[in-house]
Length: 506
Image 1 (cartoon, rainbow, N blue to C red):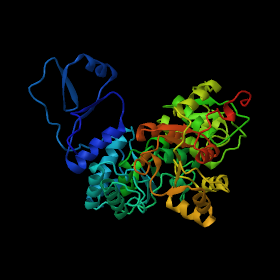
Image 2: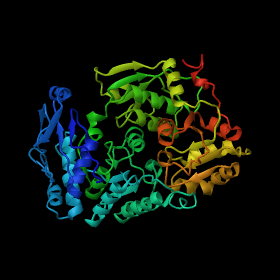
Image 3: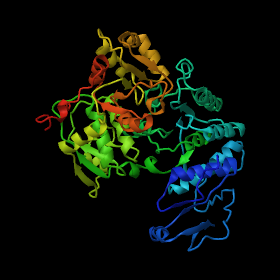
């Protein structure tokens, strides 16, 4: 949109997210670059070429700079041969439901073809992740859909924003971020998306049921929906989510298909005899590094107590290091009562055994701070649940944080109101903690994170991963108990947790 696109995308493997961006730019704004996928042999030959021209789905190599560059055009050709359309799909394409719905259907079909699907399916719930402001292009996209008559046909909820809509002005956030963020959210609301502003839609009333087909974006939400709830969703790229919400139709691919939900890697985990809540996000982060493109099934943890909050923390950390849309834990997730159920009885499943030494290495990776100092305790990535608020309140009762340490909790508005009614917010506030709604830590920067802050402590494996690059600070990672202790003392406990020490693993 700003004239900074590459001349072309030349790919060897399927790449849905970048290609979707090109499809949207073509359909909505008549801006285009060519996208070509080559065989492995042809892709390798590019390394020997000095110049190339991309046109008509081909890449021509040249030793010297060519005298021209071809124009790839500005329209999408939708080849429907071999693609199954329902009568309603065709009515969308014919424009019977409006221009926004027609454009949405064209893009969905092309995306389905990229994913290898030959048909679409009905979905009845969506979660929209493309609602956070990160430049003018995203706002122009939403405005254009709305101007074309875009309205959602299914229940649709909204992900976290860049700001707390009720507090950003008082927090000193730049209006250059706050105002367009508000406008973007309002545009999605005008299209019928519920103003839930949470990255944990599974905590909302009316969460999807086992087997329900939905269209959720936001990586932790996708993983939780598939793995923990047993619902069915692809790992949606941003902007495809709202298009599916406008039509109620989705590519019949990925985790909608039973065979695509089966585990392809069995991972044996050493069972800890001593346990705290830092075990699950650390393990999820580690498992994601092993199963980057494989759906894993974890064994060795049978009968170990595991809560929904533990599964939330595991899944969020797992989704930062793995590209897949779900996991299984034998005895804990609904499609893994046994290894055989999780794998479909396949004998071709890979195997891996995690060692205590590897887990210690991951722990140190998540703890990159060069000092024990703590200036900020960040909680709520993903957004805190009501039970997490209850646990935090219990840990804060009768204590007071240090004046030198900030403690901020992010959660959805609905959870916040429930926590207020239960008295948890008052307890945490008396301790010295603060709450933010509407936004979450992956989107928060200065001045909400005070310029004086050098060292941040979190119990989130996801934020310990993204935070150092996102905000330029050093991070401590640990249990919720350690986070509260650090808020009081100003120092992080740097010793290994009990579940990583000798004699704690069986």
